[in-house]
Image (cartoon, rainbow, N blue to C red; front, side):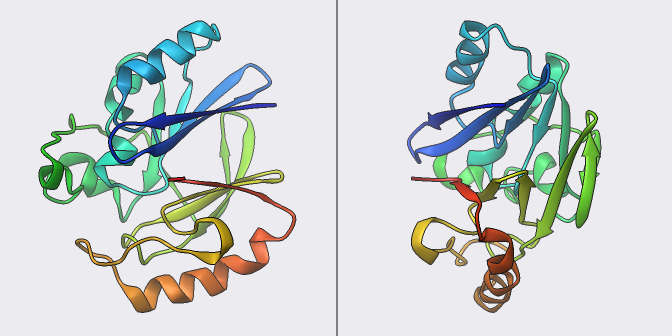
Length: 186
């Protein structure tokens, strides 16, 4: 297993490339499409799957480009509409227009088998209504739900909810023990 972190664009969003037994998963491909593609090229990798922790523009921006190159895209069903609307994905706030991206499948609460690998998905609404955290072995990709030392994502954007994120953090706590937290920023 190999994890490569790529810091993207003006919001310093973290994209992760997870290489597992010949399959490559790109988690939250953000704003710097060229950096993501050049990193894959330098490592002689091809993205097989894109996993999205939520549907904000800074986490989905490069998803459709990777899909065009053959990757299959997964997101929660609740956040999937954000792949079709710059108003819903908040790109319009920063002048970014995401390409429409049709998901190939939906992340579901619990165990998900994607590309012969098993991922545990924990729904964590609050930052967005369809936010989730994705667990693989001792890694947990928390998107913008949870950052280091208990800091959690903002809830003042469209469909954010402070009470929901507080409940989600409590739900998430047991999953954090012994895991390496790979957050969406910083």
